[in-house]
Image 1 (cartoon, rainbow, N blue to C red):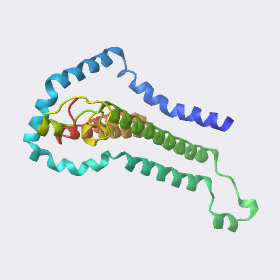
Image 2 (cartoon, rainbow, N blue to C red; image 1 turned 45 degrees about the horizontal axis):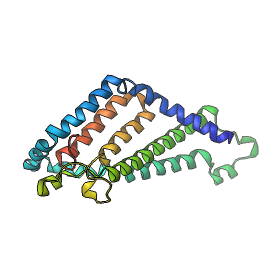
Image 3 (spheres, one colour; image 1 turned 30 degrees about the horizontal axis):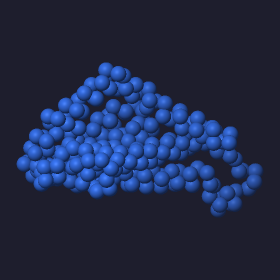
Image 4 (cartoon, rainbow, N blue to C red; image 1 turned 90 degrees about the vertical axis):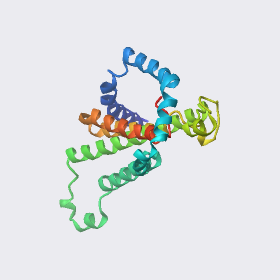
Length: 219
């Protein structure tokens, strides 16, 4: 129990810089502006912009190749494999190298190296947990809200929210790819906090490709 509590405290320390960096965004004027902007887009901008993007789909067709980068399972697998390799390298000494050394020359790793390796695995654990939470929350909201995708507006003039459903054509909000891009950006910021704004900017640019390809509305 004590080890688990220590592990949780280290995870909280990893998330703390991200929380501090996002505090300006979470202030009530910014939050209120977002809450007002989303209904405005829903009522006035979503359908005209989607129709415009459909009419000029050839301009953005090459962006389709980058959509694989928005698959959450890809990052979950990558982080899990990296964590496992890091654990093998820093937790289990090579048996042949260990056996070939005399007992007097077997020295433990320096505290500094051990601390860095432990911090890295803790960061990877935090990123993996962060991605899993984002994946489950996004999937649950998609199925519960049941918002029609732009393709339904183009062919059947269906627009809006239709309630709980398992049909993928009604899973337009929230965007899973957008959630993935932003979650990965925040995850990378846990390793390199100084580049938080750059990661977020790149994440939002990648997320906007979903609008350009008419998979989602602006809102």
